[in-house]
Image (cartoon, rainbow, N blue to C red):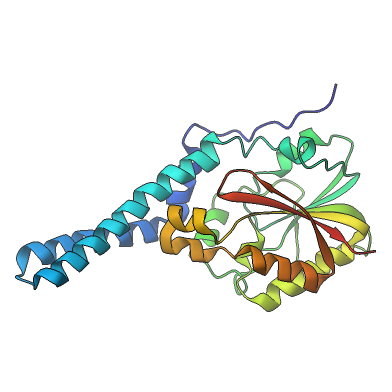
Length: 258
């Protein structure tokens, strides 16, 4: 009987509550800004056009706040994304030597150990506060989700021998590298540690219509599909397969060029 991935121990609203905790300052700013606009419109006799512009802007902010929370709940609590057996069943990944590359908030390695019990798994934490300056990731790390045995690593020089793994997983981590040069050097390192023909799984939100509709300006924290294709080519990968895990999250597999 094949191994099944064990879901991360999560309550029915843990995913969306994590989003709020990690990004509370943005939500607080949106609420305060909307309240301020309403107060200004009510207290001051502004030109009608300006009042309507302010009200529409505040309404758009409130809309995206509520929609982003609803979509986050769907993605992280309801969609089955965190039942990681789809990595094996839908992408067909059968690693023998696997590296899972995280930024310290690791909600995958426990499931991977159940999913691939005979696989040699290495977990690397590439968090770098200079290359990953977003406050949300620093807050996330305070929750201490790193797995036992996780190895701190420099994303520019991964502590693995060349060709030492056949599969690399980078799940909701790569977008935290904000500079193109940082992404390029990291993925070149990932290619170095892979065997020729090895596969890399990248799981990310994309900056596309679905995520813009759901998260508004927040979607600009993600990168478009074209950027990931550029990075793949630059690092020496061929794009192998793309799978939508929801309309908002995509899994892309890349194959290391031989």
